[in-house]
Image (cartoon, rainbow over all chains, first blue to last red; front, top):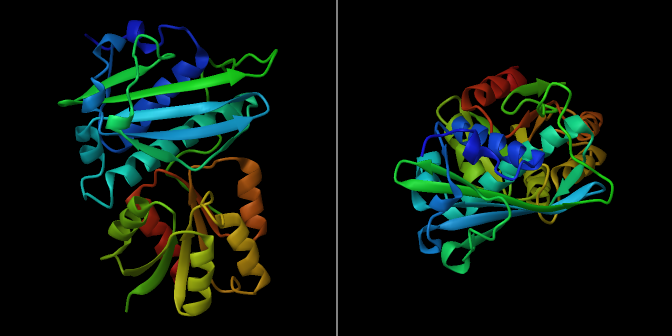
Length: 178
Length: 123
């Protein structure tokens, strides 16, 4: 299936748009183009090597972000094979949620992040049809899946900035010297 | 002679990525996995040229470590750069007030890290 709006955010939630964009940007930093796919292509649980879970909470929203991947994208983004893949999926989840957090700041939403937790794929058996807004991305012979499970405080509604998106409070990768 | 850089991060992968970026560019790397280990290393290694430090870590975070290091007078000549997923302006200001010399939001660009370290450790 070709990349496009139909697979980007079927539930029309701004938070899913944000996670979608952040996920693609993060993997692009590691020179990996992850292409959106239909939820129907959610890989079988036994193919998912690992997942990283980032809990978060704040006055306006709380929940968890889950980043799951098959073996291939983990190897392709960490070509040096540095340390364990569990450590790497945790760090990727941390960097993804950090990216989401920095953009939420632009609309006045502040959240605190927990340290990431890793789970091996065999301990994860999601039912894709019942998952809340999973985003599925394909890479060569592999998949990256991400979903955010969150609730908002009563009366709070997440909205994009007037420019129609979310802007990072600070640009990733750049150095600010004091 | 290579300059000694301490990387403090709870992710072994990030520590190794920093090592890969800096080794061969005039730097030698020491590692610590949290603020407690990092503070000990700063005390025990008086010839450190600079420190690269994460913010959110178990046991002791980077800003708390910075506060303790400053209180012990360890930062007078030791530049510290925070390397973190955090981009909250209040945290950046806090780090600056505690004596940090820079802030990088992860993921980092290896070539910029090298330039930053060269700039901060230039005599």
